[in-house]
Length: 199
Image (cartoon, rainbow, N blue to C red; front, side, top):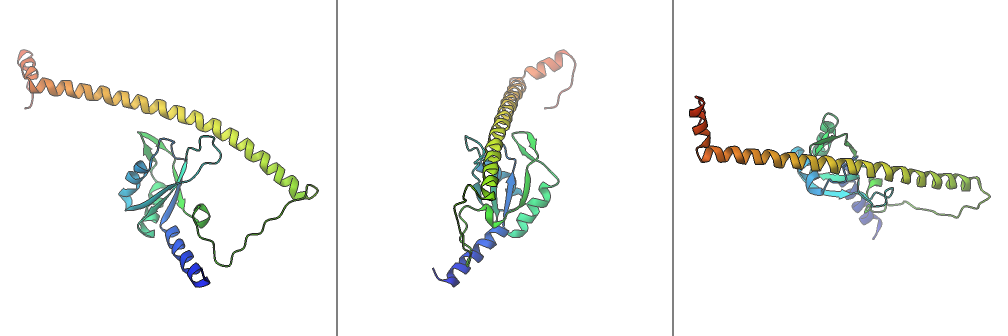
């Protein structure tokens, strides 16, 4: 690929970035259908890409890139989400949204003219100690995050089950009342207790 083609590909990618928003603090129960339904009210969602969660053993995604049809729609979503929490299974969550940046995309093309250089760090160098500390902090953060997410997932599953049971109970009441109106039981009871009911 020559330089002009690489630049054209990267410029097309930057236009995609302008239309994309980054959302995080998602419930593990969120699916692409849920996200699409939530964001379609602001415009047309063209693509949803869940981001890998490298800090959690089960790799449950907690963030996603949502591509809208236009940059204007993406800006609208971001401004609206500052005002209102996203509802997932009846539970409001402080889901945050930000404009996406190129580094968030795993499939981003290489920036023309950019070079990546790697080198081994000798144990005697000061950078070696810094790398060791970073490695330790990453492992500590992974353990803490896994514990918090597991607790959060358990609480949300419990709440979702409670909401489903409540919904089923309300639907049974509705069916019972609807049946009473259909077979005339409600009118018989109303006549007996001298009450007026609407047809």
